[in-house]
Image (cartoon, rainbow over all chains, first blue to last red; front, side, top):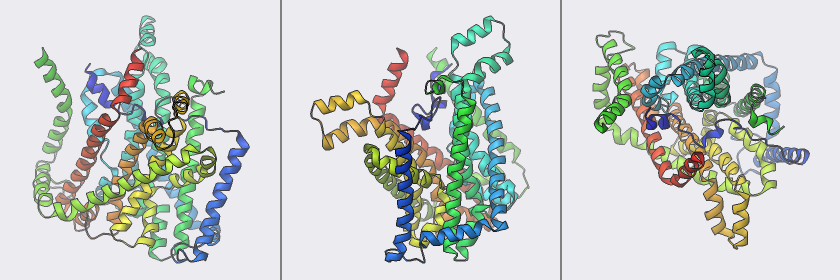
Length: 283
Length: 260
């Protein structure tokens, strides 16, 4: 095997919290940290409330926090809002699911066949950095403003996140474990199931976590730029009609959505890897 | 033998791209489908469209905005990251706020920033900064937090303080993390460069490509998609080159650790 081909697939040595234990336990002496954090959030709200009142920033551009809050409250009573949220989550979830399944399958196949890995390395390195927004015109042309447009962008962007992590994971297989499995006459499938998959799982979960964030960005981008239904589209409409505080309220919703997705992804990662030493050590 | 190995390497490197290229070329060779013009047409248009005036009128402004926004984001992100990372109290207070800001998908900031900065270059640079700064900032914070304690104590006993401590110890040991953040930011920056131009602009790559698509100049549009892809690829190559230069000590260290 050529070492350079391997090295070029595994690009992230320190990478993005890649690999097992990517999420270090972030617990300080609990309550103090939490209180300080709350104080920080309260401070942000206070600044946002005060800025327009002092006239440093015009209230036309930055409505006071109380008004944004009120708009958000009204938003929650609108059916259109919930439909948009559901649309966004559909594009996100469906795209992410397709990307994860495709990425894991492709990664395991490519990763367990050395020849395939060597042959595809350069192609993956070429296709991965292509910004998925380059596909926006293609998506519009092919699918117009339908859900498929969103899916195309989401799947393209998230697929590489998963694939690269899975490839890194399959490379991490302990040769001794693999040889042991061979001596015990495990077939190709058995080795994939009992040696390769447990080794790669932490990497897969990292890939899924990264992909879930990227998928949200691309889902909202598609809605914003292309106009497929969802929160992004609502923001574009609100902006065009000059409903400034509505824009802010919707932006806040997308941020909270991002935080929620991040938390869920971390929780799922912890569940799926509860057996892994990087997590057991903490407990 | 060496010739053989070199040949094998080149085959591995270029084999698959060549095959894919050939498939695209021949599959679309006599294509009459408006949406999928022959690759030969796209490539011919590529030269016509991008080599002339558009090089200075569209590509250059885009790249300048990206560079300005990205460098600004690096400066702000690393600077703030050092401040936040070195004080526990500041970190605790700001962490939830920063996490919230980071979780906002950067493209939704385009409409918000348009309110403040109109639709000129300032808006586009601000959009790029506001999206790129978070990964750099948060990674710098993590990097600063993880400074090796023995090294930190050693610096203290040698009386290394102030700026020289910052430069030789803190920045040095945080640099692998900072670079990780910069890598994430680079791809976000490219996305935002394109999107801010698609939204409101009179020049730039994103603007031109959407214009082609709206006027159904399909081969031109495809050539733009190719160009964007190429741009992403070249920038990531440049980044890796720079990273290997700047972090050679770190990669060497890790290799040595792995070997033992």
